[in-house]
Image (cartoon, rainbow, N blue to C red; front, side, top):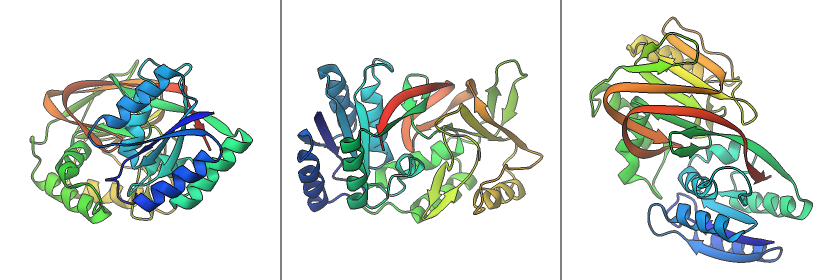
Length: 303
């Protein structure tokens, strides 16, 4: 088996020593090449090249942004004969890996990956596509994308939940692009005007430290996309759904200003003026309209 290990040295919990241990362990079972990323888009380019060259496995060692880049490279030409994906968490949240049951500890995650390689254990996962960009667990326009954009330049080894909480409060009271209304279009239904819209591919949507954040409780890699949208952002509404999102047991949200669906094949969100747009916790610019599509069994992941 030919494999490439893609390492983001700037990710929160990656270290040179951990990289060497991981590389040594993998090299005992596969013919391995190691690539350290040094610019935005590097992981995507490496994964695209791996798909073109017929590499069997690409392992992403970094955070969710690194995983997203690798996935977009592997699927640059669409699902089909893309290399399999392996993940060894190295970020602060590691939402995709944790949703798959991969250990947060890089050493334990490496052992899991080696067992999967040896035993040939894998699963097909469904992904989301937002226009031309694949996402593994979440994409959004508006408030969440404002937060991601605000912290993008400060991410790295010091990334933590407090950084995002501060940005969320700041962006709530002082939206960088104003509080633009959004219109959600669902097949066969009348358009709905909302103030924020999250589109999820699994649940939990994110983590606040160790605590999972639940928005669409039954959304999973085996089903369609989840939509969580609020038609108002008054403080009582925000606090109500924040409490529900942080319940230990994942349950369906309830509220008069909530629009939610857990298994959508597609939807679109539009705004009159450009708003920030994010996928898997990374900003990807500003858009006035994005179409979201669920793609079943899009990628093979070793677990």
